[in-house]
Length: 528
Ligand code: SGN
Ligand code: CA
Image 1 (tube, rainbow, N blue to C red):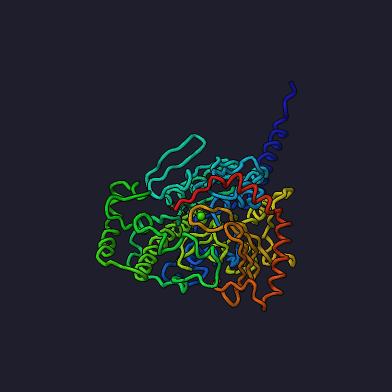
Image 2: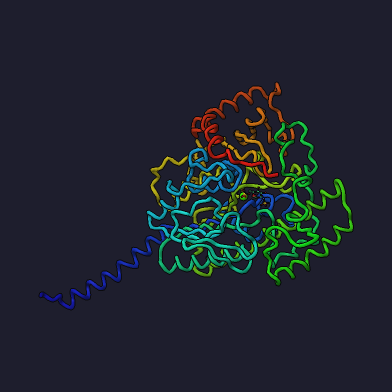
């Protein structure tokens, strides 16, 4: 056998050593990590970077850091304001009528065999991971690591599901999810691969159970009331009048507001002895006050609103603190420069506007979701964008960032140009929406519609056949349905035309809707 000369060997070794790290360096330098932090039911009204009346009462300094270092989107609109459908749209880049997931209820399971953006990122060398709320029925696909909450998940001592099965952990869900996310990033960094992390919180979803460190944070704070807290739904149709999501009627004194007179109900019953002791120290005096006060009418609604805000915003304080932990970790680990951080929520939420909690309606508070993006050296710090973007765009945006050539039939559009401060001339000026889940929780009637920068046209088509139209410039709180008013006839005709165009563009139709109503929604129950 012919032996290699020592010189040749040396050259070979030098070449190997010189080339390998350079290659890795290049992958790392050209492919940024993506950290997608996603919470459940986080209203933009409860993020101080968005301004608004709660900003000084319940600030979110860590989420605000993302806006200060990056871009805040003022009009990110969802395709369907409800959990599973939002998540399915994000993964697939398609509306529910095409990805098959139109409703949380009715036994729908996300078809994990379809194309999703995490699968495409894997193909270009990304490590992909998801931890936290999933809520899509089937097991996650397209992830190298997944550890999710079964169903809605629990706040205290949550269960997690992995490919191996379920296990329970002790502690508070927002903190545990963050611990797991940081561990995942450590692991990914040691593998020297660019990574995608989907860090999906349960908080601040109903029943709004604050963590041990935030339990007493707002207990003595009185929050300002929204001007529409006592809305009577005049000048609107039956959908707004017949919903079941009001603070007055629907919100439960015990499970939602924790005014338990006997043993704890619902998920609060999961507290262990120590957790319960800390809990009772905070809630017992409030329960005592409530029992003595014998509140009625508007006073009772006001009390409920304050209780709701105290708990909801305390859950968010926990999320915010843990967002801070992630940002700090990225910095300490030297990952900050090459990591994009996105903060968003599955939809918006009512914080007493129109007298409501929950979401579902195409009205502004639930149609709009927060979106903040930090991308060092690309996004100008402190920038604000007012273009219409959507959760439908997230997949293609992440694909462009990761360098995936888009050969899919996804329905969104990458907003990377917007992040670079250059809105294309043909960027969308109108957004299409479709909500299906009725009859079901909160009894919001099925509707579809469009939103432009200034107007909305909405068709409630089931149970009723009613149109609503709003002029957001004249009527930002959407209190006055102008559909059919003579002075808006031209605008109305134009909106109808654009609605039809979008239904064709996105391939939605009455026939498809009927098919879904018969198939996946026939088991929807009235759960009042
Ligand atoms: C639960 C809540 C509802 C909520 C749905 C959907 N009820 O059923 O208030 O609208 O989730 O929320 S609760 O009594 O269980 O709190 S979603 O975020 O998953 O879409
Ligand atoms: Ca949600």
